[in-house]
Length: 136
Image (cartoon, rainbow, N blue to C red):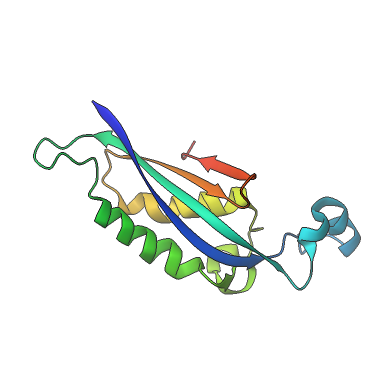
């Protein structure tokens, strides 16, 4: 029997949406105010969901303390109160859109999980705008 467990997390980060190889005008046309050269910030809400079989010995899909620690070490410590474009290596050459942030988060957490578990990331950039990524 497969069950999905989820943990919520939160981080605040600044970013700028733009492409270095485009003119300022083209970046403004595509990204609008998100292209602000002085950056802008979001209060990101993260939901990390893990699906797997219930362990017969523990009754867990994954120990939530372990999941909490992975999220803190891999995401909160790396992203919270950071300028994603400037301070987070993964975004040196990757536009930090919500879509790309979700994929980066997935790629940072997935290797830390047992191979039999399936991961899904839901990232809220605003209360109304969110993305979901499950590795496919």
